[in-house]
Image (cartoon, rainbow, N blue to C red; front, side):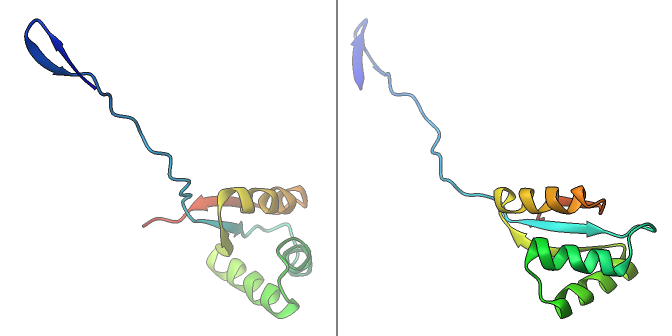
Length: 100
């Protein structure tokens, strides 16, 4: 709203931010270690992430040979509980924002 003050027109509106609800896409990354067996990682991926046995096996080999692998994508809120469930099994996992 414009107001007149001392014969000068001033603008009293203020700028506000807009909340868009946009969430950055994230990856659930599982890390290789020398402790957990292939079978344990495969079982975790099946039970926690809903992977098929074949998909979980493929992911476990990639994790082993590459050192880490993004086993699932989604929002932070979707992936955080999955990450927690995997780490509770003693497997290293993180949620990372996908770089653009």
